[in-house]
Length: 101
Image (cartoon, rainbow, N blue to C red; front, side, top):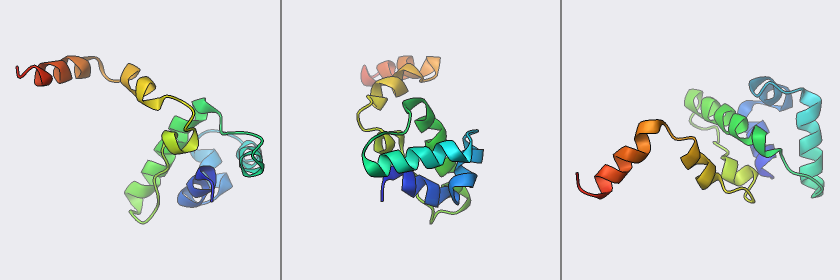
């Protein structure tokens, strides 16, 4: 099962995932078909929404799986993007902790 298929299953189907990420069900279905055929990938800018949707599903039912951006698009440097999106105080707090302040 592909990461997108796992996300669809976790959230409750194509329509449920599409609704959760503000996309049309036909678009999610197209991603699924292309991913399964090896001819396409989930757009990178949709991955954070999909991850949030699966986290919300997991929060309401811990048996449901969380699918991360890294699983959906392993070719994207998510660690770099996550650092760039961190709250302003976070980097300073980490630096102070590392220096023993």
